[in-house]
Amino acid sequence: MTKILNVNDLCDAIAASTLDDDTQRALIDTLETSVAHVAKVLADHYGIISEHAEYEGGFGGLCVNFRPAYEGQECPDVIDEGDEGGDWP
Image 1 (cartoon, rainbow, N blue to C red):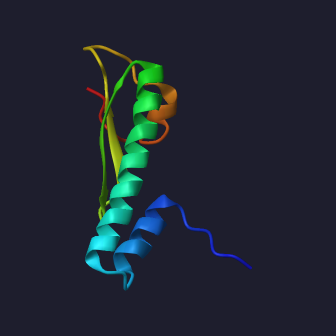
Image 2 (cartoon, rainbow, N blue to C red):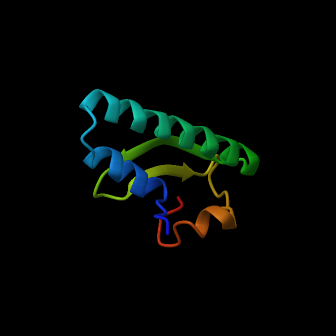
Image 3 (cartoon, one colour):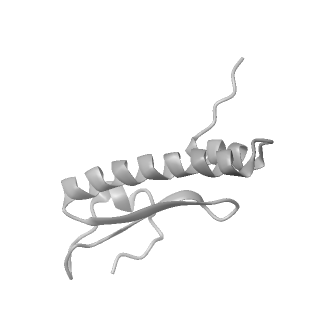
């Protein structure tokens, strides 16, 4: 048997661990940096903007904001499917 954690579960486990605060912050920083890089590649592919990645325990986990690069730009389906209720200016 195994336990499967998604990235948000992993961040929660880091934050709740007995690791010292500096190690916890360093690990979460590494995940935030990696997710921000992935988001930028995806955003560049679709010609939209991605903002920083940030982990907020208990409030949505590790998230990235995406927004249009210009007024009136349509939201790519793959982004919309990730947050169907979110606003797209």
